[in-house]
Image 1 (cartoon, helix red, strand yellow):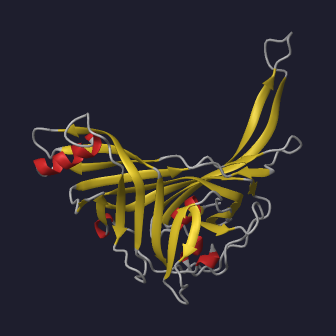
Image 2 (image 1 turned 30 degrees about the horizontal axis):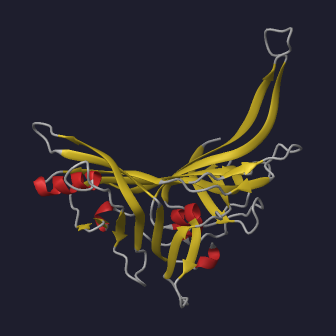
Image 3 (image 1 turned 90 degrees about the vertical axis):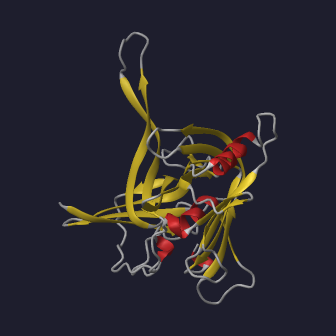
Length: 326
């Protein structure tokens, strides 16, 4: 058994926990999180020991509830991961009748249930599905010399390895390219044209989970939970004192510690323009900068790293497929 190539697909469930197979053939990115994916999946059992009073060691190992889990690493080529994480999707009005479709993605109290289909191709294909998935967290990471990448952590209702899904006969996805940092513009409140940023990352997470009844090992219900604060950091080199002062004022609120902190939006814009295919704009709302550290080495560039927390994320995306797919 030699595994040579893997694929991972995600597809929306109309009813939570009712598994769905990927489309065959797959001809769009509505079932692909991104490019260059790596996935993990597994099952978590709750195990306890039974220790009688007269014995120094357990007489029984007792098993209880179980739930599936997984993680997918990918390179962004669209905003579908944000839709899966945030759950709130709407089209622009009036609705377009052909792609690209304008999606507005915002946080929703109701997450999107989906099936994750994992396929490792080889002389004897290994297939499994995590059924009844919800997204627990999504990361967004960009640096100088690599495409924008992310990780989606998921929790599921069931892990199906007995009834392998039908793998797509062909996978010919939309030709959107990997997102590259130099294709974006960045602004923090009124500060625009920030050419000295070298790294930017943030994570969106929510307390989604599955629940069990007394009579079942398998989850019987789901809990959508609430969103945590969006947490991230920005790293920048310091070209001059004006740029350094801008960064320090974001954390201080002004020129000293007695100043009031003002919440600012961070906007990460991939050349967004209405009806421009594959463009996107990510807005992190009401961000407060909590700390910074700066390093002044003697013979290389000076750098700052400053952390922030925000209330929510909103994404505009010119999608190559209609909202009805999700």
